Length: 217
Image 1 (spheres, rainbow, N blue to C red):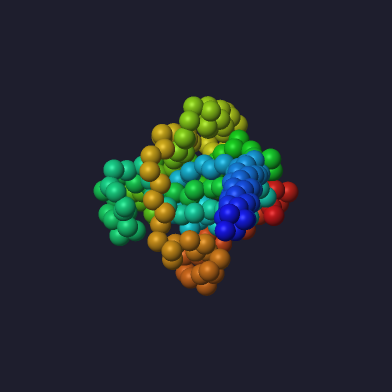
Image 2: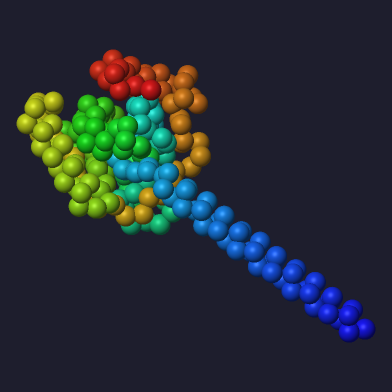
């Protein structure tokens, strides 16, 4: 009987020891995976508004170093605005795109320098026939470094007279970004025959591709 109890205790101790080792290995594996994921991620974001987000999205999707673009709304006070809300021009929000990019391939300065060429930054609250504060030209900065880069780029664009008229683009602190409805995402590529895409967006995209062909994917 004593021998049986002794064997039983030895078995329990061995199993408990194995369980602790396995648990330790599991925790170590989890920590290693977490560290590897974080260390391999170097993606940054910037949010720009240059009129209709269908246009700006179509342009930036073509650039090397751009990982993802998302159309959305920010800059106003209304929570969870819809496209219908935005179209009233009373929300304070602008139509924007959130650009996720790899700074090892393309810099924030490059992204903003291109911004002055792909829309008209001299028309206040308007791009073509699209009028209202939701269509304003705006750069949303998340920190002082982004603000300084944007200010420098804007000053250079004005000095170089990329546009004959003064640039009216505003620099605004970033608030909450609200992703637009699914049908707005990747709009130009999924609706190539839609009238606005054919007559408004496509000419902008073609002009951009000729001007920045060395930076295309």
